[in-house]
Length: 174
Image (cartoon, rainbow, N blue to C red; front, side, top):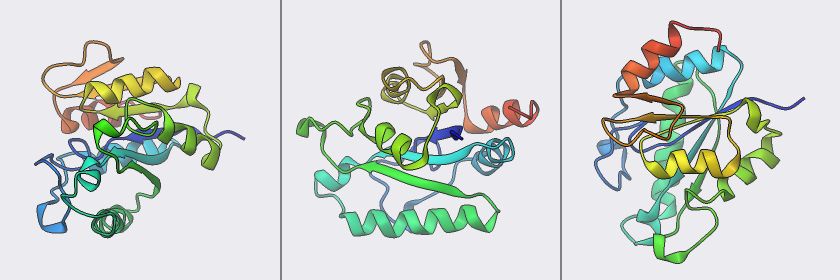
């Protein structure tokens, strides 16, 4: 049986984006993220993070720093009974022209193979145009844009993660 999935960007969606967040001390969860992900999990979606981490490729931090912070983040979700199924990341700088950097589809292709995901039953949530383009490029059914401007090509657009969580949690099941 194919899985339905929610693909989640990290910086700007799971945590506040202060630019190249690489330590626990700089990591601040966005308001509403726990409620939003719990709502999708209750509806049977697996939760998968897909994140560009060009700070690794640019030498601002290393992969070990990213992995430590990712483990810490996943543990904070687990404390609230929210299971992050997997995390896919692109460590490359934009000029590297890799196939995993959003809006390219490498991370989604890997997730589909690893978790038998039905993209027709998948959502992508992000705060950048590249997140919405990733959804379109990979065949993800629905794209949610979080932010004040730029969500015109998304299926749904919310000003904040909190507003998005309130919207979806009031409409369960998805």
